[in-house]
Image (cartoon, rainbow, N blue to C red; front, side, top):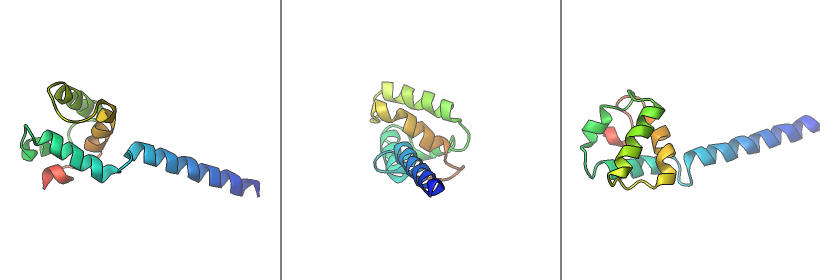
Length: 97
């Protein structure tokens, strides 16, 4: 009985963490947010060339710099945008379509 409660608690914690990492709307919403924000000034081809190349820290630096120049990504979503971009495989995601 005790192991069942522990397992249930563990599953609940994992689900909470996944929702927190994905943001309220999930990764697909972050993809659209990033695509809209970045493609206002850059071609998606230019951004796609860096997908699968930059690390999370590299993307965080880039997104932070772009936000300072007017990119429409809320400051509290910079980490989520960097995580999203660094998690894409080369040629993957809405920026590469």
